[in-house]
Amino acid sequence: MTTTIIGKKRFRSEKAAPYFFISPFYIIFTIFFLIPTIASFILAFYKWKGVKLPKFRGWGNFEYLFFKDQVFLGNFL
Image (cartoon, rainbow, N blue to C red; front, side, top):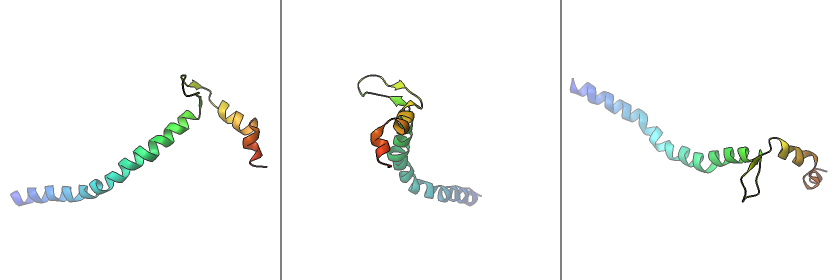
């Protein structure tokens, strides 16, 4: 009866082992890619001078970029 209990624990650890080997990739991916990507997406909706507190502008940044910024528009012509 003890062999079956050991066998079940061994089976569970064999199932979990691949997740331990792949987990460093997911941790590094989250820290260096996923979090900065989400943060930059959120910051795209704010006006921030760097020193003062950011102010929410919504789609105003994109409106300026696509319709009023001549340098940005000049790159496509």
